[in-house]
Image (cartoon, rainbow, N blue to C red):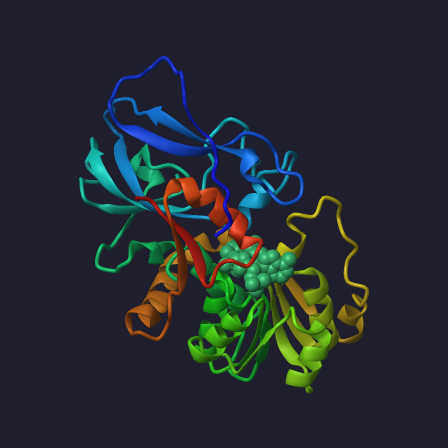
Amino acid sequence: MTSANVSVSRTHEEKITTDIISREIRLVSRPKGMPTADNFALVETELEPLEDGQVLVRNLYMSVDPYMRGRMNDGKSYVPSFELGKPLEGGAVGEVIQSRTQEFKAGDAVTSNFGWREYFMASPKELHLVSHEIQPLSVYLGVLGMTGMTAWAGLNLVEVKASDIIFISGAAGAVGSVAGQLAKLRGCQVIGSAGSMEKVKFLREECGFDIAFDYKVSPILEQLNLDVPDGIDVYFDNVGGEMLEAALSVLRVHGRIVACGGISSYNQEKPQPGPSNLFNMTTKRLTMKGLLVRDWLDRQGEFEQEVGGYFRAGKLKNKETVVVGIDQAVGAFIGLFEGKNLGKMVVKLD
Ligand SMILES: NC(=O)c1ccc[n+]([C@@H]2O[C@H](COP(=O)([O-])OP(=O)(O)OC[C@H]3O[C@@H](n4cnc5c(N)ncnc54)[C@H](OP(=O)(O)O)[C@@H]3O)[C@@H](O)[C@H]2O)c1
């Protein structure tokens, strides 16, 4: 794991009223290009006493996700920027320590958007009860959480069906590895690209991909032409850039693209030109659909039933890379852009 230890400081806030010390990661400057440890600070705070209507939660796992990089920039985007000097936010799963509400009791397991900190207080509407029966609870950040739901929603968005040949980039990551497994369960032929031979082996041997290749060893288009000479029906894009360009070349007439992410550009300081072969959209009458998982929240029950069912039946793997300690969270986050994770990158809070 990247060594990206952040400096620790104590706040000098006036209201020091309990003896619970919580450490949290704050954004202290906006990254230019690849984030560095200097953009963050690990700060200790003392929690105030719990008030009526509040729940005190200790986080057990927190998520680091590529989209958080966009929130570190200034300016208007589809998600609000993180504020400087404030703790970062993100998915987390934790245990209720104390509750002054009817809805939750000590011992309950809950998910929230209060990641990047060890403890927090919240109102019931900011928490979602999950079952302790599924272990480790980090699965609610992976297959049964936001990234699993993104994979599921992406396949539904372009109506992936058994006869499709689907190519997934970033295939060994959180979204990609679930998208590929779900596509296999639908009966598709599945091709994936990833950044190392270890990842390629994982895709072939553990996730059931028909074909997987390391996009770093030779030109992507060359590898696709070799592996799928008759082309693909669906491209699930997690990467953008050169990968999207190669996919546009090998998509068949009436092919579909799930525009899920573009991680190859998240740290670029200047916008890059689009694919040089975009005219394929016209000549092949392609469809490209943008995906935001939050648009699918009204179908969460359906997702939990279908994907949870596969998971409980042992048909779906929740692969994860676990980094231990909040002081390692920044390194885990940066590691996403260096391909350090196999499956979902999570931080276990000790
Ligand atoms: N639209 C939505 O609602 C939504 C929701 C969640 C996630 N997403 C997007 O989905 C994508 C995957 O997210 P995730 O959470 O599953 O992350 P992830 O794939 O688990 O982790 C990121 C992976 O991206 C690859 N990568 C990093 N830099 C790259 C580059 N320059 N070129 C090619 N690959 C690169 C690395 O794998 P390699 O070793 O293979 O390079 C790395 O392990 C991201 O683009 C994310 O923003 C979208």
